[in-house]
Length: 638
Image (tube, rainbow, N blue to C red; front, side):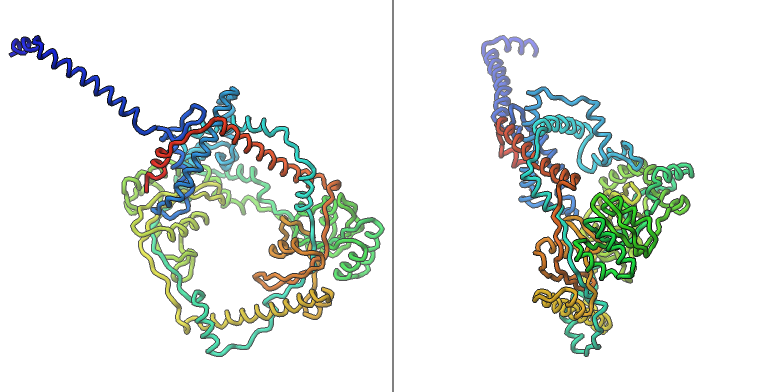
């Protein structure tokens, strides 16, 4: 047989056959390469000769999608429009970074390994409770944001180099006074108003309404008398408290933590004061003498206005909350009820009367021991929780149910029925163990979940103890909302109706006073006629809040002209106000404030310059796009 095959292989027919076969194999290999080369490109964009490959773009896109859809209910897919928008933003960012990378390579700007490590270790997101770099925290943050360590460090290296380049572009920026002054004037202008408050509690109690009135109120406000939706859930928790038995904590560690955070256990004293800000010493002495002679605060406000001074009240302020150090010392050195001698401060002359004193205090070690234990536990349990969370995540991924979790992982089981406020059907708080942040997260997740969704391990930051916790839950059932019968809520309906009548009465009285002031009546006279006490608000800026004035009124005040009157509603009642004073800032006397405005404008101009530079670098790199590859990634899950 072999000899016959040898004779056949030496014939010319066999030789032709083998040549054809050889050419076929060669052709097959070439055609395979040709088909591969002629297929769709593997890049999404090209920038300055560098390619953004599909896997690279896909990885960044998925990370961006995770961030963009983090608040969506489990199992709900992002819309096509959202995926395309996130994809375009991601690709534009990657193109800009690639263009800057080309520029950095041309300029030979590099970032040493030591610099990358130093920056990473100094980032607050990676620091533990002790303020030092924590590898467990580092790994947790990267995992939650979809990064590997190598990818994060490479991006950080590029970011540092890019920041070097961009800083050199904007290093010489100086904001001109023509742009700084208008911003400074807007931000630091101060305003004060006469105010009068009409509390709901002072309104006359209306007569008890008849049955028909209450029934009509009940019919018109169905949402106020409905039972909410309830949800039955089953959940597991992993937290520092749940693994506490596996973590040893000594008294020495607790004392060390107390000493390290001693300032957190000291409560500064607070004082309330009435203050006159006076332009010169002579007027200050005259006002102080009048005050000591027995004039009340209303009389002193009028006297201050006549003398060109400003009357201010500060309630429950700490020493650092007073704007002038000399003023603060005067307030905190005098006894309650005393009127100070004129005080010379950096902002002028002051006369002060202390109206209320709240002494400071200190929380002892024994009093703080429980909170200290929670803080130390969170820090020491971080590694234990991290390892166990990985195991739980793997078990859930393999289909293990919540009831079948191993008993040695330190898990706490939770099961029950609650509404969206976290209350049971009896109206009591649902007994969910753990820190408040974990409870809130479980309640929120319960009302986003759908029946049949697989449990997913989720991390929750718990700033109260400086650590984090995990949970996973399943939705067992839904009890739809219902309606409470009228007879069951009749008393509440009557109370609600009466409160509404009080609100209407207070609104009517406040409106009448505002109309009188707008018609030319003096504010104090209009307030007296309305039976309320006028009060001068403290001087406030646009953006610096003050507990003595409603935030809505503060916002409206800066849209009024001097003498204009307005009215705002608060949860407790209605406030009528008339703008009485506008204090323009003095840049010469307030170098700190002016420098803040100049820094803000300089930063804005620098940002604009950097944006223009990045766009120019991008255009010079002449990016090319591959729409087919882009669509294949963005539309992959549709």
